[in-house]
Image (cartoon, rainbow, N blue to C red; front, side):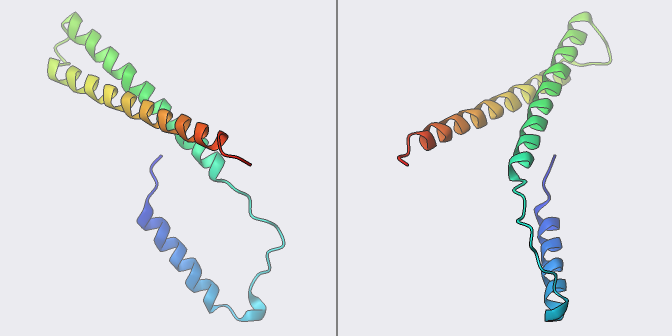
Length: 112
């Protein structure tokens, strides 16, 4: 899942201009507190990232097997590139996990 910042910003600007154009009596009243969806968004984003790493690792493994079996459709260079992509994705995921654990420990050590 990729967040498109420019499109999101343009949509927010459009909504602001529409809200300003409404007369005061026509503006909607919000009685319901907004729901914090950032937690579910982060969860979904993290699950998708882990799924992507898993797919890259499976592709790398299958390409390496194909090269070992002598499949002419897969070159050694393709297998090595897939392996490096997989490795980089895994390392990035580990670094994100480490930062999350570090932040969690820091938050838990804060006095209340």
